[in-house]
Length: 205
Image (cartoon, rainbow, N blue to C red):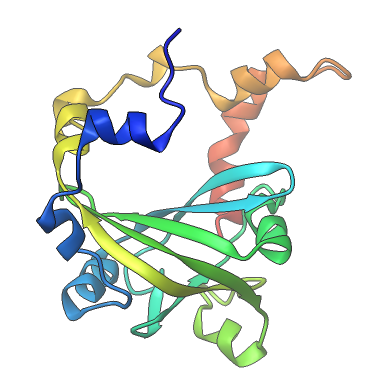
């Protein structure tokens, strides 16, 4: 199998970076990039630690989600999840982090690279309360580079095309996946799936 294992080989295939691709990168949030974040309800948070890399989905209604503290700083409240805290464990040990923001129906995405830390100041946590529930911490991202990604990936995937929606019964459910993995004790995947909507309603915040 032939591999691209040197920069020379890579550059021979892909050539130089186009001027426009370089020009779209900034070291802070210009107003247009800030406007994109303000309307986004979803991002992926990428971190790295001794065990490797990790990517975690994050989401909230716009306005309750990621907020801009200043052109070099973002705040991401950490909401309830599976309590693995993989991203948080990584940030404590290695501050490098990235985010990619998406907006339903919009082809472009916004990519941010930088470093992160975890803040637990009570006043800051209070700002991000939803239904009286505070996040346990706020991920503070210090922006180093930010740029938008063009529409090609989302256009090829037809991600926002309603015709691309997959029927629920064509994809394994969470209960089915858990039942395939849990061998040490009896587990009823169908019951898990039946109970999950009620569980999520009670624990989403």
